[in-house]
Image (tube, rainbow, N blue to C red):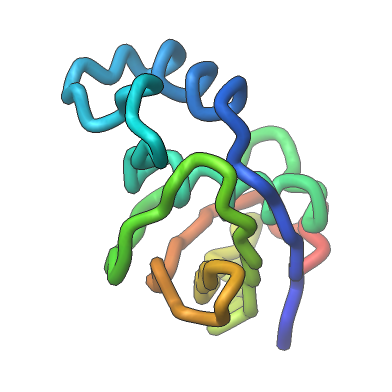
Length: 128
């Protein structure tokens, strides 16, 4: 079941905000390059933005884990299609464990990231 399908463009301002927020000192992103590279976790964060926007994640939710596979470089200015699908939705008492499949493709349809993430949330308020 697909829960989110968003398209984004990673512009320089977005990448720079991400780097500042996480205090990235890797030097991977160099705005002076012709086609600056985007840190891989910035791509993952962009994919998670779709989850937050489309699922209405309730207060009290805990991100309990993730597995990510990065398959290609992403450059500033690239268009990305970020999709999220439901893998598992288990309710146990007051809590719900939701497992989501993540997929990010570049503008040519090449998958640049895949993986899954798990959320533990109050069972009475989740839309998944």
